[in-house]
Each structure stands twice: as C-alpha cells, then as structure tokens.
Amino acid sequence: MVNDSKPGSHVFKRIAIFGVGLIGGSFALALKKAGAVQQVVGVGRSQASLQRAQELGIIDQIASSVEDAVCGADLILIAAPVAQTAAILMAMQPYLQTGTVVTDAGSTKADVVAAARQAMGQKLAQFVPAHPIAGRELNGPDAALVDLYAGKKIVITRLPENSADDVNLVANAWQQCGAIIHHLSPAEHDAVFAAVSHLPHLLAYALVDDIARKPHAERLFQYAASGFRDFTRIAGSSPEMWRDISLANRDAMLQELDSYTAQLGRLRAHLLAGDAQAIEAIYSNAQLARHNWITAIETAEKQRKDGGD
Amino acid sequence: MVNDSKPGSHVFKRIAIFGVGLIGGSFALALKKAGAVQQVVGVGRSQASLQRAQELGIIDQIASSVEDAVCGADLILIAAPVAQTAAILMAMQPYLQTGTVVTDAGSTKADVVAAARQAMGQKLAQFVPAHPIAGRELNGPDAALVDLYAGKKIVITRLPENSADDVNLVANAWQQCGAIIHHLSPAEHDAVFAAVSHLPHLLAYALVDDIARKPHAERLFQYAASGFRDFTRIAGSSPEMWRDISLANRDAMLQELDSYTAQLGRLRAHLLAGDAQAIEAIYSNAQLARHNWITAIETAEKQRKDGGD
Image (cartoon, rainbow over all chains, first blue to last red; front, side, top):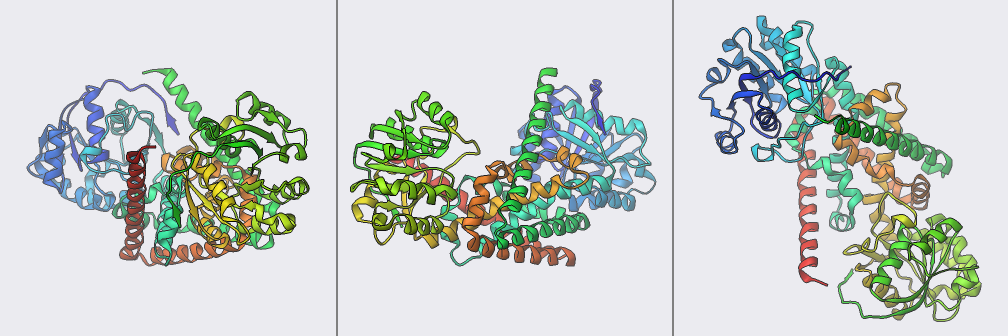
C-alpha cells in the first residue's frame, strides 16, 4: 500500500536519535534542511561518533543519559544495529512520556515488533515500526547524506495498537526527508526483504568467502572484473549488521535459500544434460524481468522528478 | 604470467573483423585512434550492423564474402558469439594466406581451441586464441567504445604450435588498444573464469528468474533496491551469449557450482543452528577479502595512470 499524499509542514520540537551514523544522521540532516525540527539530540554507544555528529551539525546536543535523551522529545528514532533494539527500548521505556512517538529503522520487522511487545508494556502503542529502504556501504556520521532518502521508500509496519495520528507523525517526518511511504505487515515486510535483499547479501558473502578459501584464490581475484565487482558489492557491507539481519529473519531466509538452492539444482541438471533451450529459457526470463523492473524504476523516478517538489 | 613491455608501433595494413559489435567495434576504434591500422574490413551475419559500423567509422569497408574479408589481411579478429567460432574458422580456412594471423575474443578457450584443431588443419599455427576481459551489457556497433580496453587485461592462451612472432603480433595489437597482456593455458583460463565470471552470471540469472516466477513477484520487484540492482546487473547480459558460455565451459561451471552449493549448505546449517559466530566468520572473511581485492585493483589502476601513456 502506498501513500502518495504531500507532507504537511509539521515542525518537531525535539527529536532524539539513538545511533547517529549513516541512517540516523541522514534523517537528522534531511529534517534540518527541510526546517522540520528545532532541536536534535543524539545518544549512542560511541562518544567519538556523537562528538563527530555534533561537529558535522547532525545533532545539536549530546544526551547525558537515556533519560535526558527521551524526556521532552516528540519523536525518537532508533537507528542502531537491529540486535540492540530490544535493549534500547527497554532502557527508554521507564522515561517515555505520553505524546512521544518512537520509531525505528531496522531492516527486519517481526523481531523488532516482538522485542517491542516485550519491552514497551503499556506504552506499546507509542512505538511505530518502520524501515527506510536506503543505504550505502559506508557507516558512521561522516557517511550521512542530506538526500539519502530522497525518492526512497519507507515501509511502515504499523501495529494494531498504533493510533492513526502517531503513524501519520512518523510518516510525516519521513516525507519531509523526501521519502515515499509504504505500508506492509511485519511478516509481509520480512518475506519481501528476505527475497530481494537479505538472501542476495548472503549469496554475495558466500561467493566471495568460497573463492577466498580456494588454494588459487590470488589468481582468481587477479582476473575478477567489473561484473564480479558489482555482483559482490553488497559483500562489502557490515558483517555484524548482516549477521544480525540473517538471524533476525531466519525463517524467511531459510525459505528463500531453499527456493534458490532448488533453482540451482534445476540449472545444474540442465547444464549436465547440455539442455541449451532450458538454460536459455531461464536466462532470457531473468533478463526480461530485470529489464521490465529497471524500466519501471526509471519511469517512477522520472515521474517523481517531473512532479517536482 | 603478465607481460608489461611497452608496445612497439606496428602498423597493420588490413585487419578483418568478424562481428562488428561491442568487442570487435571497440578493437577497431582503438587501433584507428592509435594509428595502428590502415584499413579495417568488416564481415558478419547482419548487413544492418555492418552498415551501421561503416557509418560510425568503425570499419572502412564491408567485405563482399569471407574470401574477400580474409584475403590480404595481416590480422583477423573473430568477435562473434563463441558458438559461431567453429563455423567461422571453417569458412575462412581455405582462403587463409601464409602470414595472416587469426585471433578471437571468446569468453571460453578450451572449446575454441578444440574447434580450431578441427577446422584449421595445417594452418592451426596461425590461430592465436585470446580473451579480452572487458565488456558492457550493451551490444552492437553503437555500443563500441574507443577506450573499452584501456587498462583492461587480455588473456592469450597460446597454442604450442604458435610462433613467438604471431603471439607477439596479437599482443601488440591489444597493447596498442591500451590493454595489458596476460598468458594462461586454455584450461587455466576456463577454470579461472568459471569461478569469477561464468558462475556469477548463472547465479544472477537464477535469482532473478526464481523471483520472477513467484506468485508475488510484482511486490518483490517493487521493493528491490540498489543492492539488488548491482547484484543482478550481469543478469542484464545477452542470454544467448551466456547460454553458449555456460555450455562451452560446462565442466568447470559444474565444479564451481558444486563448490558454491556446498558453501550454501554450510551457511544453511549455521542459520538453522542460529550459529552467529560461524555466520559472522563467513561474512567477515568475505568482506575482508573483497576489501583487499578492491584495494589491489585501485592501487594497480593508480600505478597505471601515474605511469602515464
């Protein structure tokens, strides 16, 4: 479900960001540029990152404690590695005031919702789970970009407990970053991203590791070219982050991995049989599907730019 | 084995190119820019492509027949889809004069060498097999680029029958296109490229086809983002060409596919067991190996540019 309505110009008084790296930092920069926030306060594990974020103008203030970060905020974004979400929710819960809305940026949603149900107690309705579909291989405040979310999708996986106002508030913040709001259930979200993001990451890591462990790895890398570079780009991503995502979305990952392994088994049989027609049918269908997908993306991108905002 | 010697300024009188698309066209454009050829004659299945190549200044003349193309050429490049190599060699063999050197640009080499042994008879020594490691997803004369080969590797898989002079002549032509000459045996070549190029293509095609056949394919593609785009870029390549390569290099492909499938089996077991440490070990090793590879490429690229030619 897509929501294409234009954002109103809600101005947030105080936004607290847990994790001032690429995702949280870009959120802050975009909202500041849009004039949508008066004050951004940062909180996180690394004092160096917080200081750097302050130098870069991403945050206005470093919180002295979780209590300090949370009190008085109208919106809180959790943009830390997804395995830390439960602990962060638990830590903030006691200080969370009525009227403060909490959201997150985790790449998996069913596990985040389960963690919220455990951690938030009576305040569960204040948590609106979401996932911005944007990223780079770089991390940290220096990687943050003011336009990281321009034209990108944000998937909100709202809880039955959430009020429409709170969901709209989260949607409004992301829309003011230039993003487009989509809605899925947590299970739908996790199944979709297992197929188009999480499995490809596993496949890319698996290939590079497999090659790197071969006795003649050095010669193999010597002849790897641009096709290999693009195919494995996502294997340059943070191993810690993708380990967490792989485990957090384990059931959907296993299902997609089994589907893919069966597909490789079919291709193996066609190769062994020298079945040129069957191989070409798979390659052609893939090429066509990808072509149609790219065309659809480019058309949407053009419409967005022509729409001009 | 690498040969880094600077190219002499050999000027070819007449070069015949079978297949005036991306590969053959870029070769002609680069040699013309270097002043390394007086006349380029084109031959191929498609009259439209030949005419377009002439309009673009890629070729000076369209051959009226294979005999016309071959006679008087000092160098012949076969740049047609690899499955046509045997038929092209067979067709030119009767007209091939002493002193003419034939080379090819096929992505597989053991099958090309086998075809040459069948087709060339007493003239086998005149065929020097080679493979330029460069490409784009686009095909045809309009895709040809004058600098496609600048800084790229050319793998020559010389035959025991080849004379040093003939090998050097082929190497010289490619060096004048800005390429760097490497030498491997046909079997070494095919094993290397099965791992770093042919298997990744199969894996990318397999994933896109697998997704495209799912009942909820439309939703999946809707949420696919830049990671998916890069991972599957090579699935935009010509299905016919990659069907031929897959079958031509079948034995090495099957070996690499089995190695990779075993790797996926190990990852599946780690996922199922929730073994975070084992998953992270694979992801981290892959990330590090890729980082080292990219660093080595960038260093080599910088040295090449600083060397200035």
